Amino acid sequence: MPNSTPVVVVRELTSHGYNADRDAVTLLADEPDPARAVEHVVEHAPADVLTISAAQVRDALKARGDDEAADASGARNDRPGPSTDAASPTAADDTADTAEQNAPDAADHTTDHTDDNPSEPTISSGSEKTTSSSKASGSAPETKGVSEGSTGVSDALDADSIGEFERAVDETLHEVRVANDITGQSTGTGDYGDFVSVFRDRYDRLSSKLRGRVNHRPTNALESMGGGSEAAIVGMVNDIRSTASGHWLIELEDTNGVFPALVMKDRDIAAHVDELLLDEVIAVEGSLAQDGGILFVDSLHFPDVPRTYEPNTADRHVQAALISDVHVGSQEFADYAWESFARWLHTEEAEHVEYLLIAGDMVEGVGVYPNQDDELDIVDIYEQYEAFAEKLKQVPGDMEIVMIPGNHDAVRLAEPQPAFDEELRDIMSAHDARITGNPSTVTVEGVNVLMYHGVSIDEVIAEHPSESVSYQAPHRAMEKLLRKRHVAPQYGGRLRVAPEEKDYLVMDDVPDVFHTGHVHKLGVGTYNNVRLVNSGCWQEQTEFQKSVNIDPDVATAPILDLDTLDVTVRKFEN
Figure 1 (tube, rainbow, N blue to C red):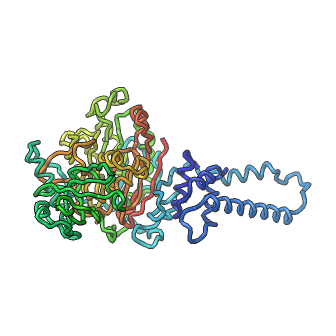
Figure 2 (figure 1 turned 180 degrees about the horizontal axis):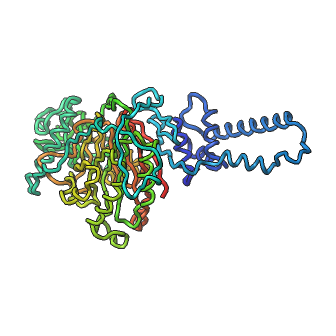
Figure 3 (figure 1 turned 45 degrees about the vertical axis):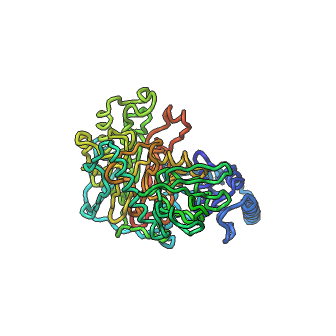
């Protein structure tokens, strides 16, 4: 197995639908051949077990040892006596043959990255697909043919380096639509009225998703209701603070005013208070105090994604590569790994990959973080984009490319971010890529992909008390954003928000796929049947990342099956 063996053990177990205790993972990682040990444990796992225990690992490994000992004994009994033939193989020959048979294929750079939750769809390992669909029975998807077409090869990757395979793609089947793009629609001037407009729009759109679930009363109407009355509020979180007794006081604001709601610390819903962010919209139900001045909360609701949501899928077997954070111009740009990725796209194995969706940070940028100039390979921002354009030319010419900007790109930092200006578009004109704003909903052959660079993930991780929501599992933070139905709820923290007449950061419609980047960590999962993908990066660890303890997942390319929403993660050597 590769580096970080315990992590890979977890992923291997998860790919078979199992979780494992920490001690069980340690036992498997300490085995001489962890992959083989995992396979044996899975084969001998009880049918009703989802979490593998250390005791079960020991029993399975002991059974394997007994079986191997019995096999060896039987082989000795069946084996003829020692040969006196000088040509008979020696023990050293047997060992060499065994080593050759067991040696891993050094050319296979597929890796397995998946969630630690066995209930979620798994991600395939190796070149054979064994994934389960997010909405089907778990069988491998049927592969459909791809029609004739043409392919383009750049000068940087000549025919000899790519091989003899010629892609056959019918580009007339391609279908891409973009919605909720701020580009060309920005009207904000920074006036106070602009801020009022964007927050009022947010409240109106998100409250409409909650009013059917509670008997909402405006805040000014609650003041006239009698003490002890049942009541509900749909409001924007204006403030959260704890009382001297350890209870939680939440101020909720609607278009009429502000009203306090108290969540008692011993209630089950108290855990939800920890994940609240300022400025998100929620609903609470409960009863008014005797003086009518406060609402005692019995239940709390988020706009959320319906549990019964059924995602859209493509009508044919076609795939999209979901990547982000290329960071061309950095001294740490994984140049050789990118060329390996581009070369792979020209191979038969990638013949169904017809779309490339890039979720921001095409280049390293200039002045983004302290002392960044010391880590730049290209110091001019336009030359960085020119270098990125050359990398883009290495991608097959029949691929549809969609790009949004990120916080390192040469656009405004405040979100929503408009797409690149005409000068940069002209530089990045390879393949006539579709360039849209951050965020945007990109519909690819009927599958709605919400592309968002992901700066607000920092905010969610910083504010959430659970270690399960971390940079090691960015898809957990993405789940929280889906639950809030907003990609960046909190104003005034790490994220800059531009005031507009409309809040482009609200998720009006449920996406089929939520694709982000920014944090340079790989994360794949599902939430209420929505596929979540945070796609890692193409930049090795920088000095700045070392200083903030970020260990990036480099040169990873999640490949999404648009007909099943299964994901295969490809790892490319640098």
